[in-house]
Image 1 (spheres, rainbow, N blue to C red):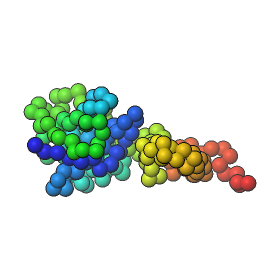
Image 2 (image 1 turned 90 degrees about the vertical axis):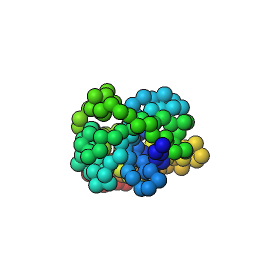
Image 3 (image 1 turned 135 degrees about the vertical axis):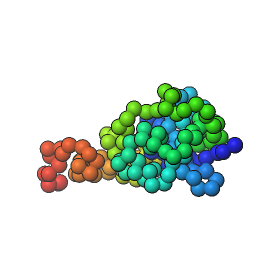
Image 4 (image 1 turned 180 degrees about the vertical axis):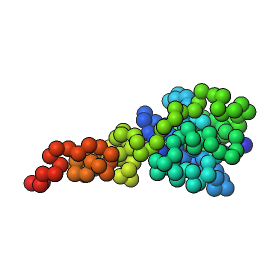
Length: 172
């Protein structure tokens, strides 16, 4: 039975919604949550070419196209056992992926999301990492959040946000 390990969370909202994974021989996979269940969330998993994964990560390919426009029709379901600490065992599926209700709507691009998790991810952080930091060092987490908010206030276009009217004013 195939298994993969979680390597990166690409979209986070009350848990990893979209993630990247790798198998034991270096294959690239994308996982999309299809059934949230707390301790045993279920994910749709497909193997993807590294180039297409990079296109998705850069916002030039939408998630539905990444999942459906592939040479291989093979797809899997996998359940977490309390998180991504252990490999996910992939259960092969025999029906056509297009015939399921698991596919996301067209147009989901990573760079178009305006959520805080995407903005933080663009800065090389994640909401999960900030939450973990807050548990261990609340003061440091608050300091990082304020520093990041200040950078966004100074350069909102970098984060696809409208310019704040006072951002062009000198500081101090």
